[in-house]
Length: 79
Image (cartoon, rainbow, N blue to C red; front, side):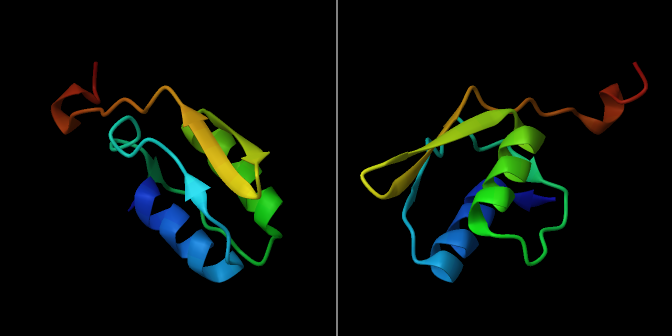
């Protein structure tokens, strides 16, 4: 349950690439899958598939596009 902003920050540090995304739109996005030693683009595919986003490379930067993520309140899980 890692906030997506933290995930992108770690990827930026590990791969020396800038990742651009709308922090406000994606503030409720969390990554719940483990990432191993996959190449950067495999990780991006997994992340985007998991949170319903897409990415593209623009001028050597990774640009993530997303409509955001819904949050589910614990009391609504049984509905």
